[in-house]
Length: 319
Image (cartoon, rainbow, N blue to C red):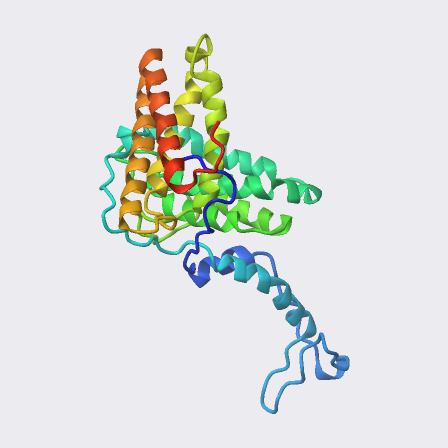
């Protein structure tokens, strides 16, 4: 299922609650005190127009703040506030522990959050990290969903909804200041300081293009450590990689946007299940120390990628 950059169209997600929007976009932004009419300068094209009789005049500084915040508000309005129902014909999900143990996913969630915090440090470098932020944040969305729905107890179980919303907000930022505010919300959600009424279920959540861009990044590392002397020494890393790949497969299954008809949607489900189950089998084999079984599961994972490409994107390069 690993696809070339730009294959899938961007996922359009519904509107988040106004309280959550304000918590992110308006945090720390205090409007300037209202000016007295005698202190106001003559209006220009960029300044607010005079108030009508009986109306309260709007300070120029406040209007400027609103103009600055408006683009951020518009981007935030693409964030997650509900999860659509699963499409018709989508297979029911097994227990999450069958393909991604809670401990493995929890460790990965911690790592992804730290990775995002480390990346957001320098205004001059934002253009170089924006793509990374989008990939990592969207992957964090499905990891959080899996932990929220997990049949094994974990520290993110009651924080999953808030973390998903925070990660979705971070994924759409367009400058460093927005990113700094958004990562603070992610940290608060991860620490249990944010509440959410998001109803968790396997549906269309994260951006499919960004998830598919993340798969080759993980696969490259997985191939490096899955055999030879590194099989055992790198097991703590590879169980995490396989758990995330399996979770991406399950988490992206509901997005049938590239299917032209019901038959292709059925194929998409089949490819997603094959990817999830082969990655899950690899995870189990690594935990058992069975290198041969892990190698066999790796072959099946690669085959699921090849089969998917043959139908949905035959021109894409497969490593």
